[in-house]
Length: 315
Image (cartoon, rainbow, N blue to C red):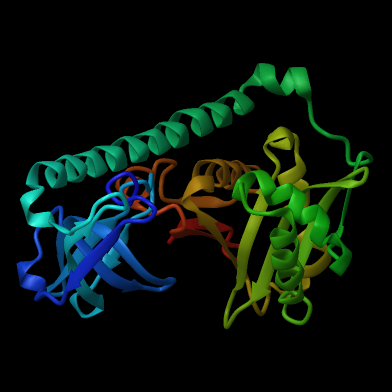
């Protein structure tokens, strides 16, 4: 809540009915990580219930949804570290309104910056890599240069390095532990294939068996090695060596992709299917506009490949 609340400040909290909480008020509430004092920057009706949107004044991106039952109280007065008495927060309306407007503008511009980065930087890179001159200058990687194989438990460190830029600033050790346990999930009910260039993993694909299809939870190639045939060889290796004999029983592979990777994976799969004689159901721009614009970063979308009917569709 800095700079409105500083180290050493004290506050008085009063239990207040949710209907009396106004925009700009500071509330003391429970969230998944514990309890916080945050500012109310919005209200929303979901399923006939009021939900408060809150944010710390110093937070750039994160906001919380607070239900009335999780509100423990409202901040009614503040005692500054260098003050001898409490001052009524209601009398500081100008300051309260200033920080409310500041928080809203801060959130708006931070989200705008993320959108600019997503649409222009990422999409521009995808377009550059798809151009003829890029392919001529940098070429494809020879199959002799890249080794395709099933992942082992010792690949957790290499996968952590591969995904570190994607999940930055997550600590490398935390990523290593995450991918160590993640690889264990594929041992008995799936396949996880990696592409290795010398001693570095540059791409991977993983599928798990579901009720009536293969679920592809990950399909990723490091951005430096995209449009060089790595993704195609990863899929071909996985299909020919492990999935082909199972297509009579499980003919479909559903690739789950996150919003941040949608353009790259979508364009790659459309190109892959065109080369392999698939019929595409849904145009190139399907799911591109409204759903992508309103989706959260972690929201997942699906693209399914049916190897029996040779068709591709979005779902």
